[in-house]
Length: 260
Image (cartoon, rainbow, N blue to C red; front, side):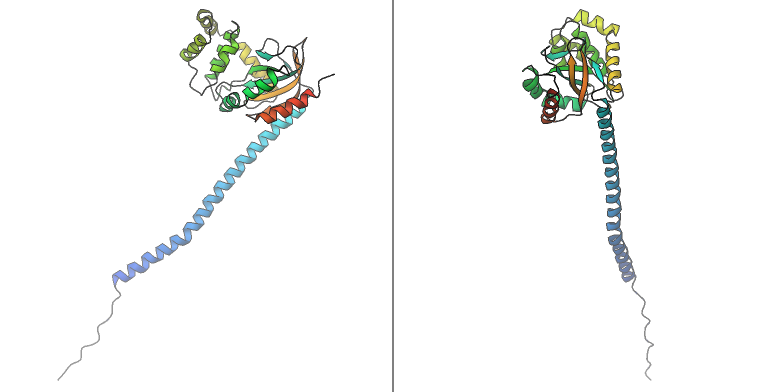
């Protein structure tokens, strides 16, 4: 008598279940990944937009301050290092920091053109003023002191071009080496630096920049100088490492204001 075996029950394979689980997770990641990318991109865009807005606001604030100062603010340049003809009425004043990267860029890329076109030709007088940002470049203050110590020996313009360099390059030893290369008498230089006798002049220059509304370096003011009093009446201002064409435009605008 034959017997018939009952049909065997079918149990799902564990491999099949794992495969479906893996496929589900993969699908979930494929859906989530673009969403995460969009969220990250949106966050970066918002941060960049916020930073740009803050930069524009700062720029507009400086422009407003400069506009308010034009024609009313005056800068005393008596005793400050100057280049150009004493007969030049138009005066370009730079407030700078020897360690500021934008100041270094201006010095290396633009100052030569200004010198060739306007200073050597006698069209303007150029005046350098100190504006070291101690919070950002603490050693820059020492470099500005050194430049003024050199000025006491008539060697400011010999040392000046050697001082525009990156933060951390103005140790006492490095400054003394630059001073020696510039022909500064070291005994008098050391006495000057040790006594901090030029610090008051550096601080007074920084205070002047702040009072004028300068909140970054380099900052430039262009105006008409009274040769008798050495007071410059501010008519135009520039901020940052601007291209030569911007300086040319501003200087020419001020030249048009010179009394005939």
